[in-house]
Image (tube, rainbow, N blue to C red):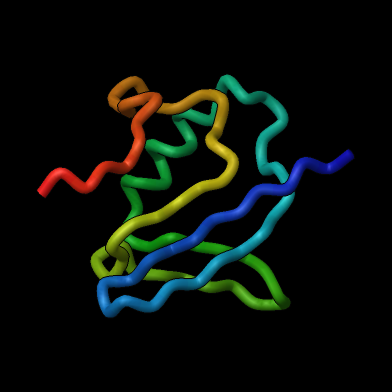
Length: 86
């Protein structure tokens, strides 16, 4: 069974776009390095719906991946819960 993933890109102007996609890696141990490589780029590139989409990182407020990848970079905080403390 193909395990589906989704990404939601939130832009600085308040808009967002979401994509569903199949699992991209066969070896989960490489996921951390793939995430780090993605974050080093000037554009997020997504192929889908018959086109290549390029989103400039400087126009992106946040990126949400679901479900959480099994292997994340070492600097990621785990087990967090959003809280309104201000």
